Image (cartoon, one colour):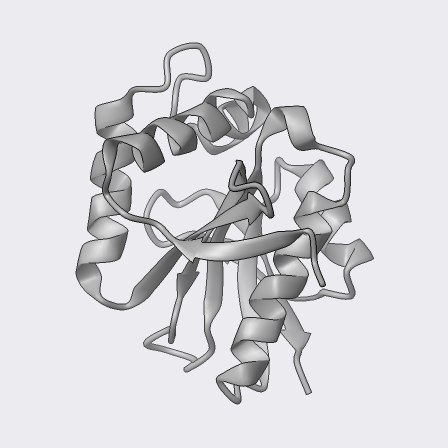
Amino acid sequence: MSPLYLSPFRLAPEDIAEVVGIYTSNPEYGRASGEYDPARVQAHQVEAELRADTGTGGFDVLLAREVGGQVVGLASILRQHPKDGYPWIGLLMVHGDQHRQGHGRLLADLIEERLRAQDRSGVRLAVLENNPTALAFWRSLGWQEIDRRPDVQYGRPCIVMHKQLN
């Protein structure tokens, strides 16, 4: 049994506070993405983003919890990309205090298991080109680069990666 499990994100104040803690603990992501000021992650900004994702019906926002219930990470999964039909991992982030403990790998494995159970044959994601740590992480898990292009929302240079699930 995995020491982590996935639970659906609820727009409850305690879930939002835990997610803000995850963002705050990852200042390198804030700097690389340009979406957040790493020194001042605003709860209302995180809530608005998560509300938009959960409100579309096309995303699953999941919290990774240890067996005792502590949140150690989160993932946002687009169920089906409108252009290629694959599910996409929009975000996978582990609390900064939990880095280098295998939680990211376990979270990625749980997502892959979830998608296999849904009979999905592959999954995709985009890594910001200015985030070599994330690129190395995904490559270590067997993901393959398939394209380079700017992201749709902000035009940032990205590396598109794919992993076969069957």
